[in-house]
Length: 225
Ligand SMILES: [Zn+2]
Image (cartoon, rainbow, N blue to C red; front, side, top):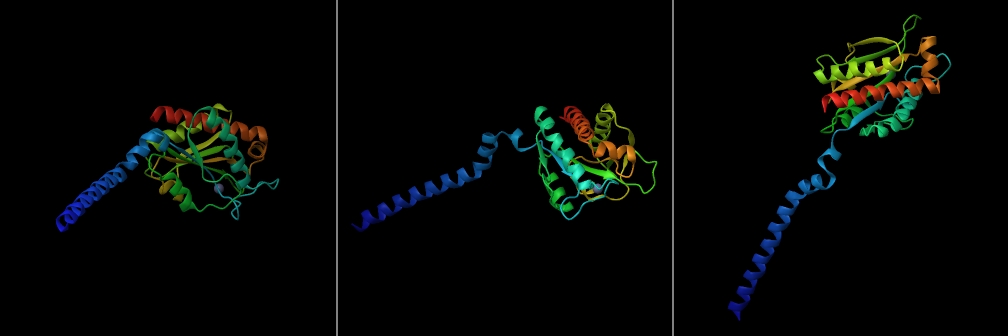
């Protein structure tokens, strides 16, 4: 009896051991299954669209009283159907009027496999005479950041916008400096300039900005895939 009991204990023990080993192996293999189930491509390769400012942070303001935060969000939203049309995977750092910290924006862009951070802003200059869009990349930026900056500029020029500058940022902008993936910041135009304000605050102007940005993005993704 004692002997039989001992034997059955051993049997149960080894069965449990087998179950535990199986469970451990399954858990270790789980991420692999998840990757395969979702497809590696579906988990990476995103473009992060970052409309600047938001919520308590309005950015600059146009002479006709429209905030930078409103303009850049409208352009980002206009980009959405075009991104979908071109099968570009994207994430918006905000899709409504809410405050998002710079650190949070960078965190979103630093997920493994993100392809590009595109931050959207408007410029301001106290005197008249400055017009057109500017594309910035970080000091010491990667080759891909340079490529992205020039192709996005090309996309906007194609839509008929004036290029003010494509250049290195000298202000140490956090979203550019801390981003691990290629990153560019586009100032869509000078909110202080009467000509630029017309396109920045009109529906058709913002549509064309969105089209130019997506055209540039598509060229960048095609070139660096
Ligand atoms: Zn701004």
